[in-house]
Length: 261
Picture 1 (tube, rainbow, N blue to C red):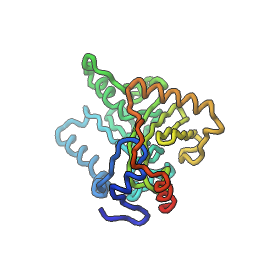
Picture 2: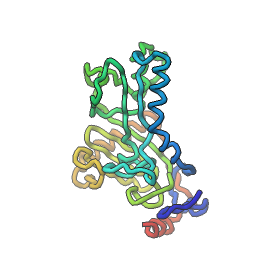
Picture 3: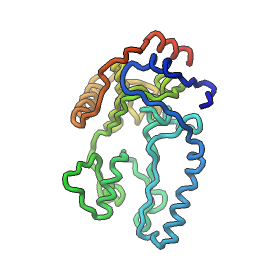
Picture 4: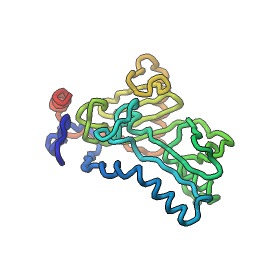
């Protein structure tokens, strides 16, 4: 993989020196062709639906599993991009076409998640849930039909591994993210990182770019969200790295971070 200006591909020995805990995952590919083709895909879908005379009974959902790759796009005013816990990595478009139900330009600002798609499709198609199957999400149909709201809830993200490719907007210039979890409740969002148990607290209504960590200003809010996050991890059995990497060299890690800034 060609090295890009401002980035360094670490060899295995150097990589292990920067990893203090958790499972290692290396990003090893490019998404340039996908990015170029993405704008063409909805048209292809609609053309085929029309050709099959199914337009009046088809719901089309357009979304993404992560934010844009920072070196080929900008997520501004959101911070960072794909592979990051900041909004540029986890806040994505959700566009739904439902002929006869939606007027062009209708919007909804209620936070939802990809885990809500399956329960929505079940309700939309009047399909019963498989007996014994646990659904993590909830149906978005009340929002889609404008006939109600969904219950207020916390949203969680858990990613206990490392991703290379840090930049000026990530926590450090070596990794896009380090092992951690995030919880969002209303306008408040809390990050926790496992290496040093550090916390970051943001009010997304006032600071969508996540520039001002409010942990010291609102310790009770941070405590409340951290308790929610910890309870959720225990409830679902989310793994948290507990064994330190014996090859980790903190002094080397800190020096590498400084050199790449």
